[in-house]
Length: 522
Image (cartoon, rainbow, N blue to C red; front, top):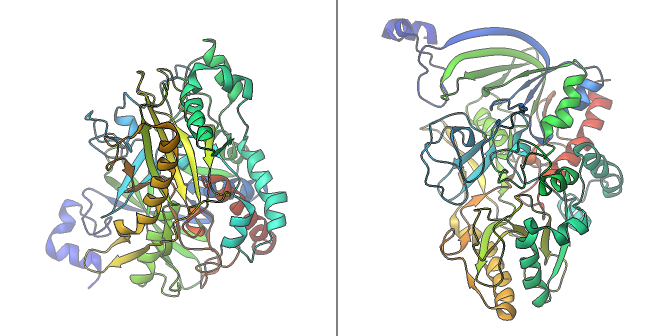
């Protein structure tokens, strides 16, 4: 019995219920619309999707980009995004409370806001839900991966080309820059970072500047009161109204200017199958701002580029494999996921950290290369509450070797993350080592009231892996078993990048697209 006959016989068709719902729940008042054929479809507008969009369109290829989140164009009134400590519905994706690593007890209306918190049993993953993906909600930290660590992850790739060509290209297109040292040394807005540096140097630990996608000349004007305060006005995880050069202002803007890119937002890919003639059939949910599906769009595509993020891309393919939609996917799909060794932690009562704090991190403690039992890179993070907290925060990235995997639940039809809390023990021990080193020479206490006894070990800002390059795909992101199906996002990196990963993701996508355009679009 086909679906239409079943709906008619049961009476469900009379109330407009579609059986092709997200998950196993029906969709009320939804219609199905055939949208026709598109040569190139890009799923997701984060770093991999943005590179894909630009390289396709600048070479004359038309593409349709489908983004799950909304488009948030900046207004002259600087009211597109809300501030970090006064969040409203714009802050969070379909949540009654603001999505944040630190609890913000302000109830909000459920809305398709910019920051999602994807909750699994022992791990929550933060993800950008907006045109521009994670670039809208991150701190803009742009660090090229360490070459030695990169070579250990992908020994088959040409490291010379990656570090001489693709990573520099990524940094150029992202408009990466470093804060002027004279401004950093003198402004009150980085007193919190200088406080952490003093602690690190007293403990004989190395600190270093890192680059960012923030416009620091704009920030200097912010500090002088000449322009609207964004990075100096408490904006970051819910978007920046000015100053930060997110993807919609760099890669995606250039792609739009070619005239070859069509963009549709509030679109979620629910199902992908391959047709008899080798094309791909896509079922795409059209969402409203309450998160309900109002329509299902049906496309066929010659080529599909999956850039829905580590979680999204992995879930799409794991589901397609186990439901028989793409049965030739190999067993590497869904494997080798990791949180990039993320642990959030903090210290109290050592040095004053200032009532005015920039939300844009620019410096970190590097214990990755030294003679330490753990490899750690600790970003010095702000706590911009507008009061003196005497608290220093760190987002630590460790080389935790543990990996999880995405698994299909046949009963519910959902794809979940198999990751146990104990798998973060190594990263917690590494963070404890960092705090103990700082404590011995500086005194102070662990920030036990923040996170879980002082360690945020149950969430990640840097999800990586699930469809690893060279395993689930070839070494250019072509999905094994399916011509014309590609991955260009964080799912390609096996669980750890050693640093904040978006330059890694962007450079890898540049590497892949050059080869794909040369051979697959000949």
